[in-house]
Image 1 (cartoon, rainbow, N blue to C red):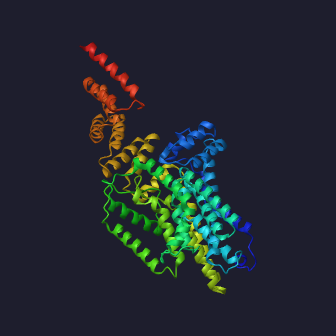
Image 2: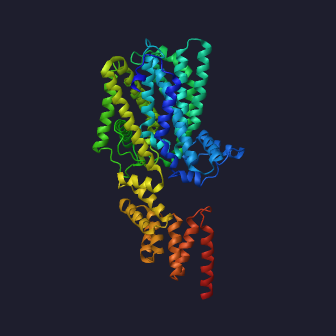
Image 3: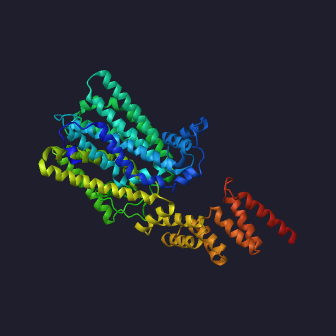
Length: 558
């Protein structure tokens, strides 16, 4: 293999594409044995709206905000999956893997374009550029941080957005490679088309206009930011206007959709958001360098303290890295570009617009860490140029060994996503304080009929989060089913105190009072249920029947 890669002859692109596709597909092959897990149940098992490509299905796909996202193109691919595979999860996983394979191949071409931009004197088809692009593409594709996006069907939007994101950047770079007006217009329109598609796959594309401006500085060298070339900037901005307008619209839509899952500023202030953003910025770099203890769920602490050492150190590190790279911009322009692009791309997913209970997520790196893979390809090319003979073979051996280690790690990581129990056990192994994972595992044990373990999990939830009303209610139901009505009543009372406008605990307490022949108490609870429950609450009709029956008994007794 090394002899082939070091050959002075031109490597056929087709061979490299086959190599990339084969390695990536083999790396993620175990996902085909995985099932639907976690949010997949709400998105696919309990949701029939996407199952087909009829006019009604298409209308739903292009108008829905299901799962707090607007990604109609992702739903299109999922609708096609249903047509091809029905509800067999293997087919859905196969589509995810194939999309990732496509991204790996496209990323190879993206790195090659960057290397040609930054090494003008090199032969565009040289073996060095091709092998460097191959190394960078594999580093992106087989890195364990990619597993979550590939192995979880619900993250289909990230994979599809990645396809169009990469194509948008390639088209933009190609546009600036051409001086002919017709060619530039063609590549501009293609870039705008791919950009629009990226927004319809996932809102991540909103970062592209800023990425364009960074690339204008380096490697395109169309604008010198440090020398304040304002007249040049004014000539560059008009071509960005369509991208900026589309990005602004998509960004406002995404913000509006997710507003319900974002903590209020009073709960999560400016300092909290800033320190969390700095933490995330450093967290993903550390995980890229050392992908160990990767978890599907990094829980954001309920009592967030921005003055803890890890957050202060992250803020200082982010400031130090940025300052250092600005000072060294003449020597390391590519590193500064990669850092700036990474910070821009990951910014919508940092603490500034915190959404959900997680402080970070491996899937957030799918596009955000692409600049580091480009940088890895550039570093490989630098080694290719500078090293000769035995040192060249040694360096390549180390690099390919590292890629092999990453591949094996990812291969093993895919098995964590096999089923819900394996998934949740892994989360709790890494973070025994994750009360949300305990609650979800309790629901799973309860569904499987393992009531004793379900009670244990709900008890863990209560110990970790004493204000978790649903855990009290669920444990109360299980205690009552095991004959512990006293413990059940205590749990329902606590659940009602913590969530006085939730109907479930009132209904469950009312049933216990009914069986204990406490008819006035049962009337009081069932009446409260009808007061607080919405008309769509599934058990409302059943409670109404109980209430009518009890009132008849009371009337007869009188």
